[in-house]
Image (cartoon, rainbow, N blue to C red):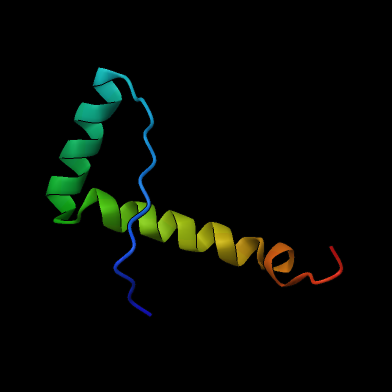
Length: 56
């Protein structure tokens, strides 16, 4: 289910957190997008009842 559509969300993190995140990502050879997609997918799965609820 690939889509050409992109969703952009901006957020701020402090410098130390950014350094740590970059180091973790480079050590594990993964991208920030991969992490965010995984978090979003997990959030959707945990809240699937909201998505499938047709009573509202």
